[in-house]
Image (cartoon, helix red, strand yellow):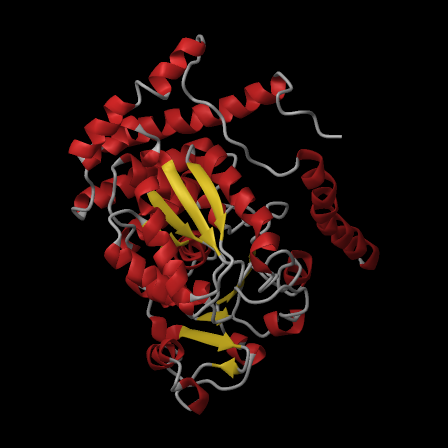
Length: 443
């Protein structure tokens, strides 16, 4: 078994080794491509001066015409200060850029969305807010990414209230919606009621704070939820929490038995462990899992290394194990959420991204996976299932219409077919570039 564990750990390190080889080889992952025909240099008179003056005047008379004459309606800004990157922490804007380029790649390939990474050399909350407001005329939406808490909550709240385009923080709503989708199906697979689950949330960052909120909106009795931060279980006896409004609110809403201690105490008798904390693999011990309820569910979502290796969790008795990594089964990762969600929001020209829209996406993800047949290694769709993104887009678009925040009214079939066409086109362009070696083969 020890040899097998070493082999598995070595395999788990390979993506990082390959990344160090391939990133310099391609000098990044994205570039700007032309989408209009250039039949001759005479066409520049249409696409640029003097012809471009006509659509400019049209937009000047009616600002909504910008969606007809430009790519604004399919453009998203990925805004980050690099202060809370993956499991790496505050590594700065330059070091965070490879992650945001990767995010752009996923937006395009999975959702057909043109996303631009914008790394900011400031950690000032007000400057980040001001920056987003200034660039808003260019984009159809803004994706906040890898911004440390608690300022990420204030930035999101201010922008959602003041900008007429969808703004969301993927580390909050994106992580929460995918976790909820996986949790719904995990509960079904182990024959437990979703709204009665006893859950330990390891970590108190943006993701788990949003998860508490969305779990309650999804019908969960959050009194059965226990949250653990770096100092231990959050409860009403913690005097250090009273000056932290967010954590004090969690203390008042959760932990009905007022448990005290740390991670092992929070797991005692729990049905579920959802860890969104720091890279492992020794954050969660196998012996702690053995003290959980029957058929425990483990979501160890830290990147690049989960809080516990899946094989160790399995040996300890876990019935379902999910991580945030694509090279393990059950990837509970934001990449299943944001591409389809933004696709749907953009296609109906939604003015906001609400919690209800996030839950609509979560329910659609869960439903799709259940239709395919649930197993211990398949409680959530894979990224290669193209249809799931189109279905997610349709669910989100319809929820936006229902809530009265969509500027375009379409039926569900129209949203689905439009999304599927755009996503298929994006994938086919990439395949064609590879086939014709415009994207050079990997070494």
